[in-house]
Image 1 (cartoon, helix red, strand yellow):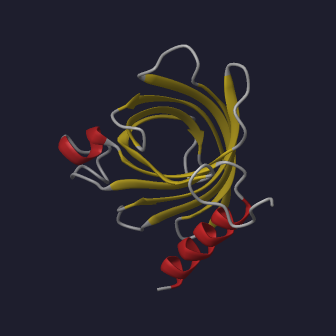
Image 2: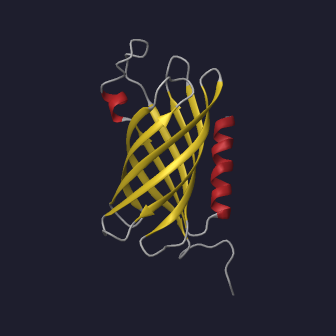
Length: 173
């Protein structure tokens, strides 16, 4: 219940302070769901779910800046939870069907002990409709419970929930 309240608070905050667009991304690691983990401890299929609320800022010449709050849950023997703050830039003027974003994030993780994490990644978005895109992410992450960097591939969808052209909390008169 606490996690649901936290995600709701994150969404309300992002909605209130967004400059242009709010998006919701839900992703999972296809490898862990289909094949499982090669680690002996976690040799079963595992759910690794990432939920990101992202706000996009004003369109520039070749793209736009963005920021996001994210929550990651990995269903391990001792559950892994990660909360992160992300900043990045998305290039969207080179193709009508694709967007490419670069980002970095910092966060905290909880797998029995609280630890500091950081990551950098690239998002490739295939635009299906004006509000829906398929998102492929390649992320290099440093987790406090691991000794080395992890290369994480995630696949999911992004839905644009709010767009300034259609909805504004504070309209200029």
